[in-house]
Length: 228
Image (cartoon, rainbow, N blue to C red):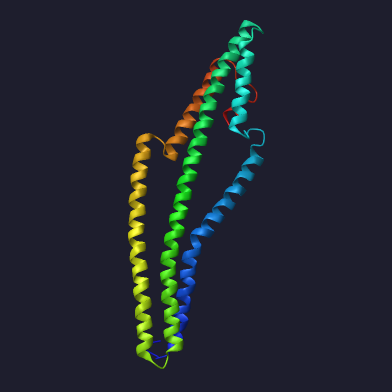
């Protein structure tokens, strides 16, 4: 545009800036929506593969386990049967602890994801709006004041100043997010609640439960359903 002295080209370039700024604003929102849709699809796929192994609600599992405890407290059945069922009850109690802990981890992760989404939307709006502002002022300067280059230059300078401030804020916010993520990961690692650590602990507990069942000769035909 400068070489050809054609302000129309500069106006078109500013229009693309407006589009880019709008995408910056919309990306966090569409990212959250698409993530939720992907999670919904994944849950349906998993439900098809493990239809009989999926526990619908932890509260239902707790209720059933409490009913089993009531049955075991009654003096009925042979001694060996009661002995085996008491050992199974311990396994079920451990499974309940895993399910409750898993729900707590899921709630914590959802809370973190919600806070991250709010931050992304807020700062995406600020940064995207600064770019949109620069684009709008660029279009006004190029298309409305094409015969007055000094006015066009003032519009471009004002838009560039706003966009520069937005970019600087984005750079600082990116550094802050990275630092806070590393700090939170270190704190979670000390507490043993990183997703990797939680999964490792859960797998180790499930393996121990499975070995306990097999060692006592109580592995049922559908023991895999319990471990799921």
